[in-house]
Each structure stands twice: as C-alpha cells, then as structure tokens.
Length: 333
Ligand SMILES: NC(=O)c1ccc[n+]([C@@H]2O[C@H](COP(=O)([O-])OP(=O)(O)OC[C@H]3O[C@@H](n4cnc5c(N)ncnc54)[C@H](OP(=O)(O)O)[C@@H]3O)[C@@H](O)[C@H]2O)c1
Image 1 (cartoon, rainbow, N blue to C red):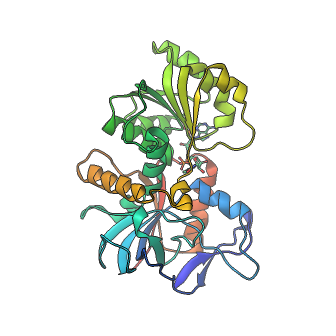
Image 2 (cartoon, protein in one colour; image 1 turned 60 degrees about the vertical axis):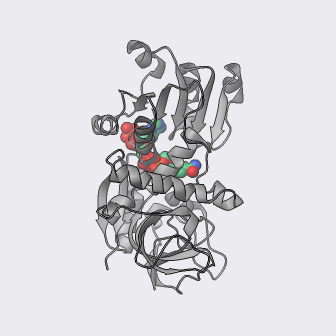
Image 3 (tube, helix red, strand yellow; image 1 turned 120 degrees about the horizontal axis):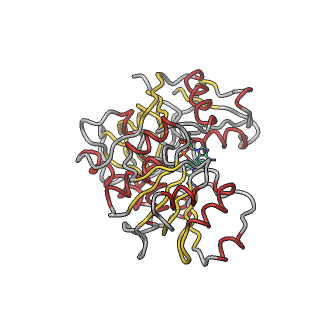
C-alpha cells in the first residue's frame, strides 16, 4: 500500500515526507484494519517530524487522527464489523494513519454517525480526547468547585473542542482566549461566553468584565509564557490543566496559590495499557453528541489527496501557530 513516510527528522523547509510503497499493516489480535478516508493534522505530529528519526534502514509513518472504513477485524476486536465507518487515534509508538490503511487498537476507535462526512469525523478524535481528559480527568464531570473556566488558545483544535465540551456537558461559564478577529469570532462560535486576548493583560480584561478569578485554566498554547498571568487569574486552590508543558516551569508561582497542576498526554492510556477502552467510549459519546447537534466538527481547511504536497501544506499550517479549528486531508478512493 501507499503511505506518507520519512526516514530522518527534518525541518519544514527541508520537507522530506514522500509517498512510498510500504508493507500492509500487520494486525494484532485486538486491532481493526481501517481504510483511511480522512486524516486530521496536529501540531504535535509536525513536532515529531522535526525531532524523531527512524531506526537505521527504517521509515516512519506518522498520523494518529483518522476517519475511515473497517476492512478487517482481529479475532479479539469486538464490537466492530467490516464496513463500519469509524474514527479514532491510535498509538504513537506504532505506524500511524498517513497511509491507505492503518492497523489500530479497536479500544481507541468509535463508530461515526451515518450522515457525518469522513472529513468532519477526522476533525474530532484528538481534540475530543485531549480536551476531555484535561477537563474531566478520568471522570465525566468537572472537579467540585469548578464553575468558571478559562481556555487559553480557544480557537485551536483542542481549545475548540474544550469550549464545546464544557458548554455541552457542564453549566460552567467559559472564557476563551483568541488574539485575532477571525479567531475571536471562531471562539465565540464554539460557545465561549466571553473571549479575551491572550496577547493582552488577562486579569485586566477579566476584571473589566466583572470577573475576579477563575477556578480552572485549561492552557493549550504558550503555557510557560502565560504562567504568571494564569496564576494571577486563578483563585487559591484552583486548577491549571495544560497540554503543552515543556521545559522548566516556575513551580513557586503555582505553589504560592496552592494550585493543582494537571498534565495530559493523549496517548498515556494506551502506552500504559490502563483502561484504554475509556477513549473509545469518550469518542462514541462524542459521536452521539455530534449526531444530536450538541457538538460540531471543527474542520476549517480541507486538503485533497494523500500526497506529499498536501501533507507539506498541512504541516505549514500546523507550524504557523495560527490554525483555527482543524486542517483535514481527504484521502481519495
Ligand atoms: N498533550 C497532548 O496530549 C496534546 C494533544 C493535542 C495537542 N497537544 C499540543 O497542544 C498544543 C495545541 O494543539 P492544537 O491542536 O489546539 O493547536 P492549534 O490548533 O495549532 O492551535 C492554534 C491556536 O493557538 C493559538 N495560539 C498560538 N499561540 C498562542 C499563544 N502563545 N497563547 C495562546 N494561544 C496561542 C492561536 O490563536 P490566535 O490565532 O488567536 O493567537 C491559534 O488559534 C500544541 O502544542 C499541541 O502539540 C498536546
């Protein structure tokens, strides 16, 4: 089959992902073989392309957000049949979905509603799972005492789903951040009760709106740079959940307000083999919510074809830091 693959970690201006003939995926007992119809693109995958190389003589196929059709089932892959339309993520230690077919653990897959386009479905899994686990941890409700939430990066792929999940599932007042007219408009469309600018004085903007503190900050972008402002707007014993914690963090600022710090890595369950099926259940619930109109897909850019050119364009958008919603690649059949 064909896949978009590369060997050495590389920068965008030396883009080296090419369409290559690779062996068919080998199914494990609990796997589904999925014919890929659409691929969601994430900045984390661009980051892996920049930093991860294949073993000598090998090649890497990235991509852990897809929608497609089940083409075969492993003997232990229950609940799915050939022909089912599905969406999911995968396991970042295995080959991903930038390919004609992908083998994926059935526990991180869910069926998609009949009338939902593959491109729409492919915009959901990473945002839904990352936002859900960040906001609700291993539960399906907010922590006690959390009724006002600030989502930093409210127009991005994860922030868009976080705002929608909060508004669909909780009575929380949701403040999102966005810095440009078009991203502000999108954050509002996602359901934010108030939008403030992360390039400005966060506490000042909240005070101007009559808000003296928030209970939870979900920070999706630039967390290290925003930390002082985040701590300023949180109440004592408030919560900071972040998905881009990297490098040194000033824990003094966090402990000064007795804050709880919540980290999230969307592949932590599959990596640890711990209640992996919870992710399939979260995605199934999201699929129901989309069918019922409580959640909406977040595709803003659709690129056509599994080609090196579309993938380079997608990486260029992902690395811009200005994505609104999600970029999706439609895979021809
Ligand atoms: N830990 C995990 O499991 C996990 C999972 C998924 C993603 N991630 C990571 O989470 C981050 C966000 O992912 P994503 O898919 O939501 O990204 P994305 O869609 O590329 O986010 C783009 C948005 O980020 C906003 N933004 C850019 N710089 C910002 C800053 N300094 N402060 C606040 N907002 C800023 C932009 O808003 P404006 O244009 O309005 O400025 C833009 O709308 C990435 O670093 C990604 O790798 C982690």
